[in-house]
Image (cartoon, rainbow, N blue to C red; front, top):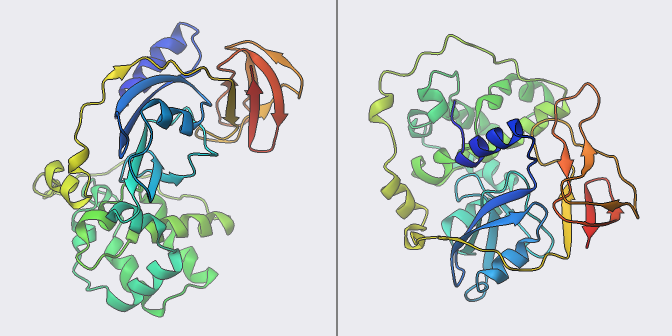
Length: 305
């Protein structure tokens, strides 16, 4: 197993009956004072950035997560989830941002036109090297038509094997194609068609060349144009007074949590506000502040002090 350090800490806390109501979040990139903060779950991202001195300059984009797997967010209307590890601020002309902004239609058209069939995306794919039947180059070659019918999409169930690391897109492809984005598109289409992940092999054997195909982190950082942000992010005290939190009902594996409070309810820090649906996989959500439930929506709860 690969376990994030904070996840390991939360497992220990769970055994002691301590809920996940606070998050360690690193704020880095184009901010005045990069730092790591312990903040209540549901804290607005704008408050974190302001606490770090604000954004430097104009034309910046914000990611929830790192440069490889992070998602672009609107800092004015986005809050910290239980899965948030970092908030990364990058210029809009950074190669990472440019790739994330590209539409799937453009990625499909580019794959149709300029794939060289060089196999680099497959040869460096971590999942392929672990022994999974995942061949990004085969996917790209099959897109010569530029579009796929529902019947054709059904034959791409190996898309479920992609772990969304982005190495094919951000490092291996010499003509700037993105197998990752097409795999993500296919996962959504497979779900729409009701096709579940059929891949459950346990007899995996790592590729014999795996040890020679690892990507040097120093080169990767230069390729992503983030090597200049290799600054210390000290654990610092978060002194901002949080007056309102937004708790997303889907911020974990499985089904969204079901609210167990109503508008006007009074809650204390640590109180259960949304629970796991009966018979489903999911996670409970607890309030990270004392306050009043101001909104119970389909996607989130709002609690104010």
